[in-house]
Image 1 (cartoon, rainbow, N blue to C red):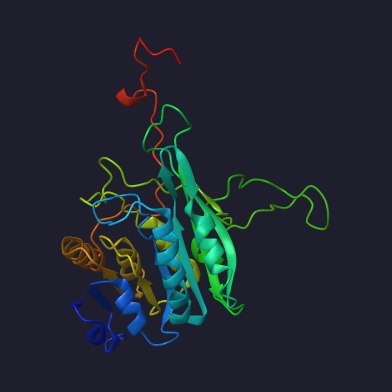
Image 2: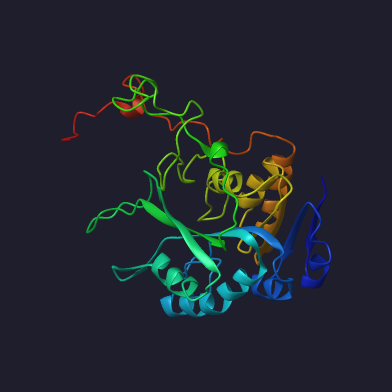
Length: 302
């Protein structure tokens, strides 16, 4: 599979039918150049403006100003019936947190053709430890559709039933098994996808990459094989890996040249079927009592 890297918006625009196209440049320039309604789904996590090495701002007002101009363009390039999935967290300012999904919602709510279908909570167990507040352990995905005629394949993302032996206790099906044998709806709180920290198989030098399983669940539910997935803030290509692993086409944009090269290598590996990301279906490891990390040292009080 060939992956083409473009440095001008025009070249990529002329090759939207390609399988994987990466743009090394400003996503704003690329999106402005794209035709109306060309993307089946947009899945991304934008910069939070908190001073990371790939950001130029630490200001909430800059985050808001950027999104006020950018999100209408995102809506324009999304197909009718397509989806936009915007994953954000919090902006810390001397201990005063701003939930960024509130700001994104305030802008998207002005775009009449977009409708909020879910506010998904992505919950994880590991991160920075705080001393003067509860440690942050979740971020948010806002899922919008462009109109009401959208795709949603629940069977593609069902998870195992918690109580597979449960039976109906009343009605015409009394005494019969009540759960769907294909599994249950994963719901809007996702605690089965660990974040990328430490020795995670997907860890790269990117400080804030999200796990491949996050876009995989969205891609399986919201698209069909051959559909076009777009990530305007691609980073090291997690969304691209998810797309090609499930036979979707992909367009990604990224300013950092090093990240573009990492993304290309990771997407190629995923296309070859290599074991380079944590499968969505793999349950989270719960340490057993005989594992060293689960044994309580003598000085622990709790």
